[in-house]
Length: 306
Image 1 (cartoon, rainbow, N blue to C red):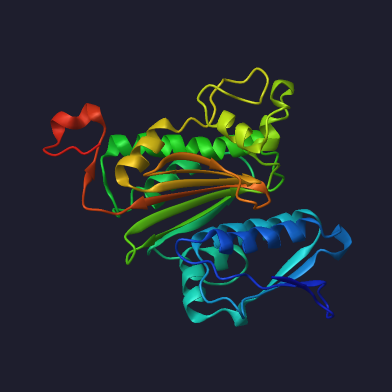
Image 2: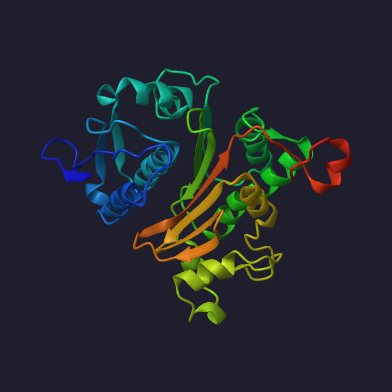
């Protein structure tokens, strides 16, 4: 919730509660705050973040909050976090995943159930690959062969690369994740504050007539690109989608006013009536006891399940 402030700062942002597996209602409030801040004139863009009404702040909200702060700063504004309003549980999590250290607190992150908060203004394939391999899928929360882990993280790296190449984001890409032991799930969120996938797709004259859902569908096809002369790549993500299906996990993408979901029910493109100028990916995997490997590795495993 964003409200005017009669004091030194122009606005106060009260982050909404966002649970482990956020509902559309919770995300609508989160995206509404982002859109409201995007409409504020630069001269009034001073924001104080107060956590008084926040009980739980999941990995998606952490990535969005970090990106929002950098977006405000890029426009000449400032964001002040009222750390003293942080509930103890949220403070511990933000310290563990490195968010507090990123924003000026003298609390070094440590290894735990968090996939660390990450941000980058420029694409660095090596850093992104190491982050995904060793901080996300390689932490032992799931039993995945080295070859499959490398293949999946390679496809997820495409999400980051496409964000840098197509989103036109001035502040780069932001990411955070979490292993939720009680839910037996592993999540990763990747978000940018650019023009959004549908807007990028419609920048091609041949795609101008497409609506948001058609644009999102076009982007998910292998061999598509909005950059003239670039290698036709598209989001594709075929291996990732197959892995998610076998694992009974999910992939959810919000961009502009559209959404795509990949889960046990297949691939669904929907108008969610949520406006978000950027693009948000959330990958949710089930941390079951199965062993996952590539088909080419089947002879090496007694019970290969992928």
